[in-house]
Amino acid sequence: MILLTFLRTYPYMAWSLLVLGAFALTLAACPARHRRGAILGGLLALPCALSGALLCVLLYLTGEGALSEETVYWAPVRIGSPPIPLGVEDFVYSFAAGGIAWILAIGKVRDRLVLRPRHRQVLVRLGLAHACGLLLAAAACETNARPMSCLLAPAVIVGMAVLAVRPRNWRIAARGAAGFTIFQFLLLKALFVAAPEFRASWNTDSLWGPALWDVPLDEIAFAATFGAVWPLFVSHALDGRPLLGLRPNRETHLLLSQAGCPSADAEAPVRTWPRISPLPRRPE
Image (cartoon, rainbow, N blue to C red; front, side, top):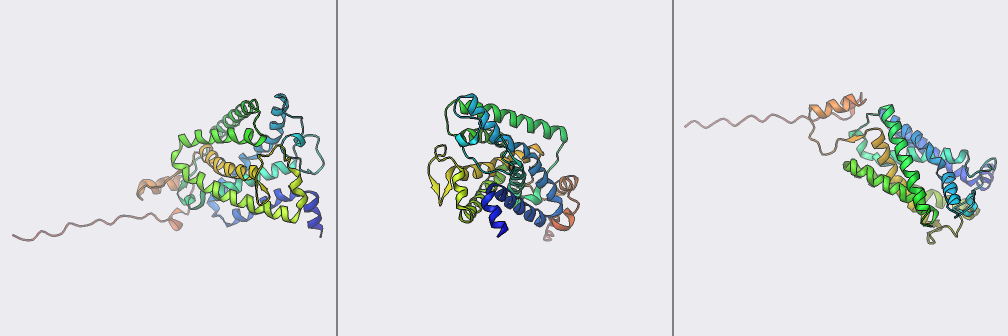
């Protein structure tokens, strides 16, 4: 009863905690050597919590809204009722969503994904991506587009740029888009059933219009875009290189070992190709 009351009073916080719980479960199920990348994926996503507040500011500066999400996209109840559209729920959700999107995206690729992060490189790429995204979002707001369009357009452009640099990571983007979309859709649908009033948090005038089983199409598009773009960016920021399509040899084994895979010998032994002796020549 207490949990149901909390869910109906603070559905956004309940949503964030459910995503965090799902991330914790998937993280526990991952091999130990892959947990570092998942946690880094969540930590790098923390600045994304500011996207809603920054979008409100951009729309306000362009004359399209006020400094409140009530006239922009949605107005969920946040713990403490902060004066700005930013609360602890945003940071919890961003961390958990970033981590679980990474886990869903790497899938079977994880045993052949080499991560070689360097602190300065990660910070530079993170800052550059957010700066480009902010400039692109400001340009999108000038076109009087819908709020979600202003949010997703920069992400798509940045994602395409990263994919152009790392085209072999398209499998990561595809898995992330499919996995995170299904996860987000089912979770939102369950929340709408348990707390029907949560659906009223969205501003219908700012949505694209249609919905799929009461789930706004904007949220489905957000899940697909985030699930595809975020793992792509994390892989690029951490200098991730999938060793797909490479013939197993000593060089591949050395790369896996140097990337911090101490159990590569036990869990993914390197296949060696047998030496075929020539057939003996028939005596003449």
